[in-house]
Length: 548
Image (tube, rainbow, N blue to C red; front, side, top):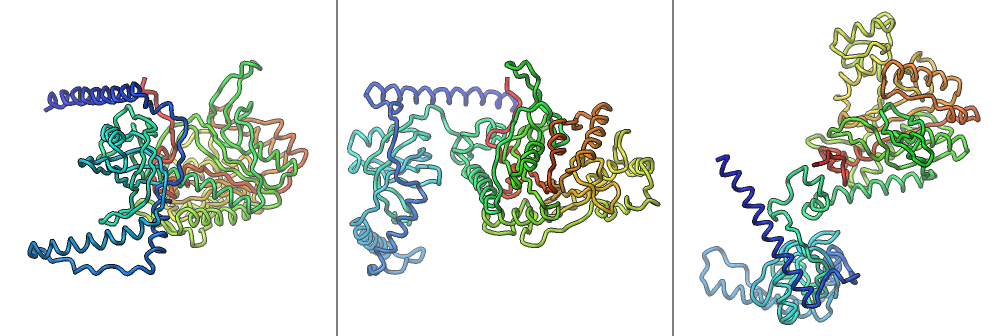
């Protein structure tokens, strides 16, 4: 059996090579005949497939509103006499032709263009399916309408060829809106063989590496990226209505701050200086708040030199916004409103499924302090000095519960680890987890009355962290101390620690008003709203290991 399978692979490749050879020979024939499709520079495309269908439905409705249909006898039961069946078919065809004559007297003329995904040649008349950005439409191709030479050329065409088609819309006897072709122009000759129609492109790695083939074959995949575009457009639309201004900040930076992540390094030859790719948008956007812009946001690529899994890619799209004169409560309200708006605008509902889980964005999002979540799911109250008095007690509890930690970690770090280990998976419906420990929040304002905690929240949905937000730290003295603690962590071996940013501290000394900020990954949000199992399914060209 193994030997048989080994023999099949070379044979299949040999067959493909022969098919490719035939396609190149067809192209050479076209070029010799002065019909080289690659010299065509443009085509007058007046409609897309869905537009054709909508136009024809409206046209049909208008034309037939005063039309009296011919009577057709009821469809015969199975096993009816041949003459009864023949009479029914004749009457049905006569009624169809009469209706067609009325509709064709005022034709909807169209010019479409797209890739041929199917064809069936039947003597002097044939059918093909053309796929464009909006979907598929059937094309009726007849020798009488095209002429002998053009019809012969169509018969030699291959699946994957790109055509421009002029004709008029009509509805077949089976009820399918189609185009009756009067002119066909081969715009591009496909020299490769598309995956087999009924199985499509199912190999996941190939789908990611050859996204152009995936988008050609899989309409579901195409729909994901159409929705992704709409999501980003709706974010911009929502924030514009809230008086936010979109800005752009540097990708190449000397100090990559604003998040706990290892940056990518590069070298700027002209300045002979090492630089990093940004890991966050935060610190430059806050500089703009200092400059008086008050409400700013950016949607941009960030880069983190970390592992790849179903929810992480080393380059991804981040949305961050900052608003002066508000705090993390204002950011919670804005986030909830934004996520609800996105679901309603993109999906048409605030209740939808991710996998087998029904998510509800219509209800008020839950709000839960991190320490209360840990107490709820472990019984340990990190706010109780009798139960967790200090760092040593926290580490002892971590050992007892099997939570891994590093020697440098403090009580607040352990609280965060407990939350990640025991609580995250329970945050299925939208939940704001609030009031993080100061040790894991170096850029966040302290929460009055809660020693060791800050005004920060993360939005969790489906057990995933979807959003991170703060009441932004604007005290330059406190910020310098926090940076010093991060520098110490870096010296102790933390590759993801932030470093002191003197220019950012200078900006804070100029004076930044009380400010709220939000950041969330677009890719994970798209996963959620398109029911996609992996981040690579929502990235057009995800990062992959080179085949070579």
